[in-house]
Amino acid sequence: MKPTGIRAIKVLNSLARPTIAVRVKTSMCEGWGSAPSGTSKSSFEAVEFIQNADLSIELFNNYAKKLIDFNFQNFDDFEEVEKIINVGNAGGSAVIALEYAMLNALAQERKRPLWKVLNPNAKAFPRILANVVGGGQHATNSIDIQEILVAPKAKSISEAVFTASEIYHKIRFELAKKDKHFLSGRTAEGAWTTSLPDETALEIVDRIAGRHKSEIGIDMAATSLFVRGKYLWRNFSRQQKGIHADEKKHIELMEQISNRFHLFYIEDPLHQDSYKAFSDFNKASNKYSRKLVCGDDLISTNLSRLKVAVEQNSINAVIIKPNQIGSLFKAKQVLDYAKKKDIIPVLSHRSGETNDSILAQLAFGWQAPFVKFGLAGGERTAKLNELIKIEQNL
Ligand code: PGA
Ligand code: ZN
Image (cartoon, rainbow, N blue to C red):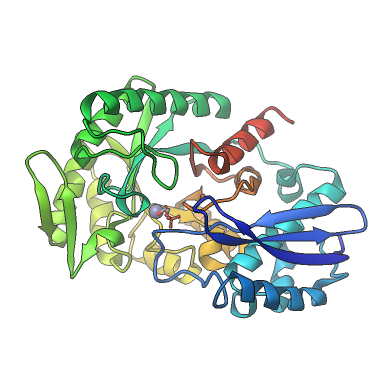
């Protein structure tokens, strides 16, 4: 595949904010890609824009001329592409949109699904982690936990998706009964919001998920709870409100909910700098049964941070978000290293998404054991429905 024309434009994401889409034209086809964006970002993430989307686009369109006629034949060629366009000269969003567009063009030219271009031997489908109730920075006046997630144990993607959707609607019904203030509000990722305490929300999800052969997990996104050295829980339970927990107390609360509500997956239980506390929590969580302790902000899809975490045994799972590092090439390196070290990679959407569905193709092509996508909203369903299509061989 050789680009004959490359152009970036400003488009809207699901948070009604600007993002970048790129079109790559070749003599045979055109491929599109667009970049997501986070709300609860870590401080280690790559810059999205050079100042703003407009300037990034201007800079990108200039550098992109150097990629005309670049001979792009496989994923590893991105190493060369990134010598020409990278986070430093165009911002991470432009790089990610470009790389998605190039892969889409390559797949079209090869007349194959993208996953097959990446890996013709892909077989296993990922398990889904679906966000059903949320709060934190993804909503106002909802729970402290950013995401309560369900992971159906299903024989197929389709069964997993529709099981999760059944759970999602049953939860809505329960919330409507129990929460006087419930307005069917949704978080940035389409999960229900509620004025009930965290414990009550967990109790509802645990009960309903349990009836549908599904496990439950949370993304604590604990950095966003961290205020002047303490974790602030506004509405932990009916009895306990406004807890300013030091690290020890916070870990106690996390262990309490983890055991009581049978969590099998806990993402970012602690602040983004806490390798050592993660390690203590990981050890304690895996003492009697296996639980996934996952690093999102802690790692920020950064290979050197992952290496430190592996060394300190801080986690046994890791979130992969290509735009956190502003390079699909580097994101893949993080995923590969994680697999090599028996750390479970979880390919994840962001709160600010577009209807780009490439994450589903990447997840299957890269054989990611888990994906974290939302359930509601076109930008979320685009990815789940793409997985269903892959499964149906369409
Ligand atoms: P985001 O958060 O808002 O940064 O995309 C999602 C997450 O923390 O997993
Ligand atoms: Zn997270």
